[in-house]
Image (cartoon, rainbow, N blue to C red; front, side):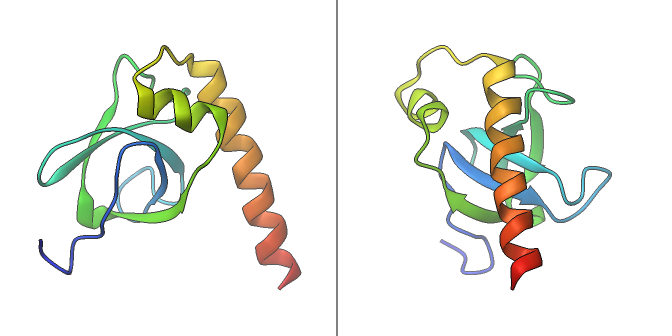
Length: 100
């Protein structure tokens, strides 16, 4: 695997580093060799995920939430669950960045 392309798996939380959605958090719900399928439950729902090159995202963390487990197992996930979970993660990331 190319070292320039980050090792990102399904159910990871990533932040977009390029494009109109730069700085937004997404869950990885699918993967292809060069592309990832991303959803946030708002602009990009589970029905219409964003197809984005791997090099244009940065892995934030390997989420261990209930939503991440459901994505990994292939269970049904609602867009509202994605929105709620990403908002929670964003608030914690922001609090950690402001504090340090």
